[in-house]
Amino acid sequence: MFISSIGRRARLVLVGGVAVLTLAIPATVSADTTGGVPSIQPASSRDATISIDSISVIGKVVANVRISVVCQPFDSYDWNTGETFQTTDGSVEFANVTVLQAQGRTLDYGSIDFGGRAVCDGATVNHYEVPVSAAVSPWKNGAAVAGATVYIADRASFQDSDAASTGPLAVRLSLR
Image (cartoon, rainbow, N blue to C red; front, side):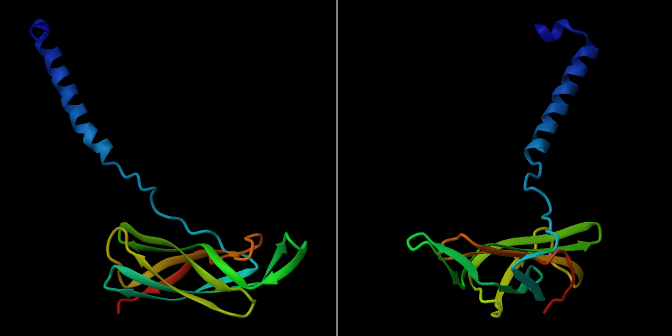
């Protein structure tokens, strides 16, 4: 009885409002909440160096990024003896590689975190090969930007740490 008591224009406005609301609900539910394109940290170094040695693309969807890390020995404190000692046994607590590639009006990206072990004696080069998957569309031959970050702690007591970041680097992706 309520609908029949209002005029034709009011019914059209009411039906139109319900239609707009019905169309708006799926759009808000399917909104992208992934956090967007990852960023690359600026270049930095604290007792460590990191470099991107090469990048090769496999099957257009995975970019194998080869990185090298050199870190310094850690000063660790022994709570039982009260003395400080040096150790070279490192634990990669956080490391990340990010690849960004402009493809026309689309920005493709991939980012991955990894961990592992490291020998931190100031001379040993620790090599890592990290597979970075394309998130938006397949990787293409051509220019891209890549960056890597590493944070290494001493495995004896986790009291000392080394860190480094490459900053954004211009690279070339090439398909095998």
